[in-house]
Each structure stands twice: as structure tokens, then as C-alpha cells.
Image 1: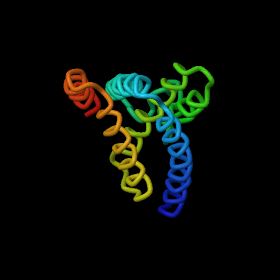
Image 2: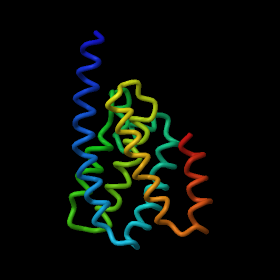
Image 3: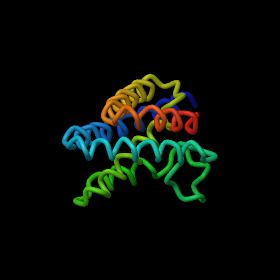
Length: 146
């Protein structure tokens, strides 16, 4: 059973890592105003996901509530591929929020490494928000996500 669990976790980690590279590229191409908007959208998504019963299933239909993982990352990456800039930002924010919660307390080394990378992106986004907005918003989102 442990072998099956590891295989499932490894395949999930590979998929999320592939999606992360795409999300990271999308973030790196953003201008500063769009990056600030993304930071605030990501905060809101993190807070909303944190209020859910199962934060890692945020963005997933309720009937799939007992799945190992939800549709949030797939929805987020699909939106991140959109031609519409607003949809793209919302997709990236959704993907970051769901992946943050999904990998947060993972015992699998690949997923834990991905969590650290997501934290690095969140740290970069935090730096892009003006100081007067950043402190309160990020603090509130951290409390909601916990």
C-alpha cells in the first residue's frame, strides 16, 4: 500500500511541478501593476480557501469532497492559459492558493519542495505590494489560511 501511495504522490508532484513552471513563467512576464493585482488576488484566494472545510479542495465541486485532490489546480492552470488578462491573473491566484494548501503539510519530499517554491513565489508577490497595504493584507490572509 505504501508503494501505491508513493506512486500516487510522485505522479501528483510531477504534475504540479510541471504546472508550477508554467505558472512561474506567467508571473515572471507580468508588469508591476499586474503583479500587485495578482498579489492581492492571491491573498483573497488564500483567505477564501482557508475558510473552507478542506482548503486543498478549494475550487472543486462539493460532490468531490472526499477526493485526494480537487480540480482547483487544473482550473487555475487552464485559466492561466487564457488570453484574457483578468482571467489569467485569477487562474494564477487560484492555482497558488490551492497548491499552497495541498502541499502545506506534505510528508512527501517532492511535494514539500514544491511547497517551498510556492512560498518563494508568495514572498516575491508580497514584496510587490506597497508597504502600507501589504502588512495588513498579508497578515489577515495568513490568519485566515491557518
